[in-house]
Image (cartoon, rainbow, N blue to C red):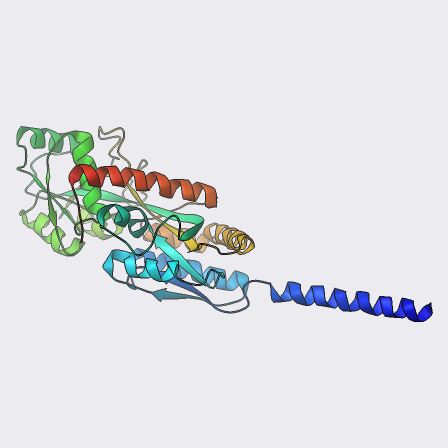
Length: 326
């Protein structure tokens, strides 16, 4: 009897140790985590992705290493993340354009923004600015609308390329204002802003951080910002809604995602850690410098709804404007 009890006790002890070992073995993360960013170093997605990765490294005790997988308007990095093993060791710090605009403007994509990904959390948003130069003689958005209606097709707006967020912001303006302002694509904000300042182009859309120095120097005028609330980077500039377009709201967003099939426990752990990161003074100050507004408290379900609503919105705009990118 004593021997049986001893054996039973030993068995319980062994099972207990095994359970502890299994729990330890399944703890996350046990090795470095790769965070794919779809755009080159130095831009807003890269800067915010690195700040978030650094904070997650501190919290979770393993390196979160940013890997810039660039090209094809963000499609290359997005595909790489979609094809990664869904074990939590490859994540995507996603910008909105590859996820909700590219599916509308490209004839085909090597990934599905909904089926191939698990949303973890929305992290930040940023509005754009509608900028005018000396070729535009009006003072505000209503003047632009009136001139465009009086002279259909005679006014031009610039963007950072066909199918870009700036391009679609201008096409949405055309739709909601009932005007026909021609689109002129550029290879980035820099070349386009030169033409606006030089009087070869009336207006252009650009990010708040990139355009603010030119506005402060008096080289460009900001007519409006595109978000539903004023930008901290341009607090004196009205929104499009305030300027007379009640349904106009365009904000770029950035968020953390994982390949479809990543275990729910890992997704929850990453969501909680990201929420803590977004609530730090370090990220708040850094985001303000980038013209971003941090979004705290958005879980996977609300993030997924945002993706679905943006997909529907941009599909409609792209179809109306007949935009295609091969």
